[in-house]
Length: 192
Image (cartoon, rainbow, N blue to C red):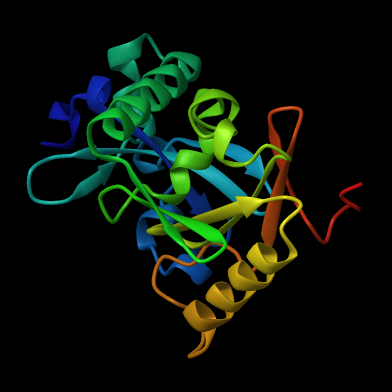
């Protein structure tokens, strides 16, 4: 049955690099059963998921034969499908000094993978560049890089999400800033 998965419907999804943190047993599989992962940095990977109607299923190494074994094709398809999903369902709402992004409850944080979204669609909302919080896969918020109040609100939001320990589908307690189409943790380098 798993070979029947249509990888052309795969959506790129950010996953934490440590399987024990996410609690996802699928990340422990090896060989042909291993999920296809692309290293992203900051202890994160890109996984590729397909909605089979009942659940989200990982694209595994065995499924790459549908794309002549080419991971680069899977990566392009995953990003294209994520962008399509964003175009159909994404909503951005203002809360005080931050913007909250809503999509479908699974891929919100993955929207950080879409350069066009940040460099074009949302760029007018954050003229000094974005600061992003993605504490879990389904929570994404951002503010302008020059907004001290916005940054404080993002930090408060992250603290609330992590207050009772590691949340489901945890990603990061860090805030991220964007430079040269890449996200860097605010703690890893000075911003300016």
